[in-house]
Amino acid sequence: MAEKTIHPQKPEKLDRYGIKQLVSVTIYLLLELLILFIAAGRIDWTAAWVYMGLRFTVFILIGMWMARTHPEIINARGRPPKERIKSWDKVFAAVYAPLLFIAPLVAGLDAGRFGWSTMPLSLQVVGFALLIPAFTTVHFLFWREKLA
Image (cartoon, rainbow, N blue to C red):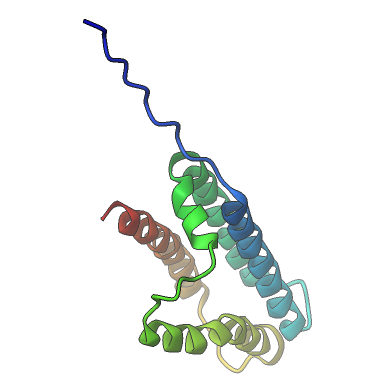
């Protein structure tokens, strides 16, 4: 009787869609940085550098982890949307997408240039500390959605 050999499935690697997704997010983060500092009219804004440093650090660390352990998720995010996208998702995306650029614009104008509002340093520290679980939760939910 011939012995049956089981070949484990080769783990998926980043494909062109996955690379496109990583490049797109990198470009968005660079645009966010530019909008933030151009709106602020200055580059000596420590809080903005800390914020963008956190954004890039989380993106790099989680991006490397996802690319190594679950590249199929990054690949799927980079693929063109399918026709089966629900209409409410299209409405949400149409409203949400501009906010991705409006938020750093307003933040730069407010905190960086005009000082419309003030935030005590203690609250800034708490806010920065809460950003890490906020950013990582989003990535975790993408990963969990794939497992469901």
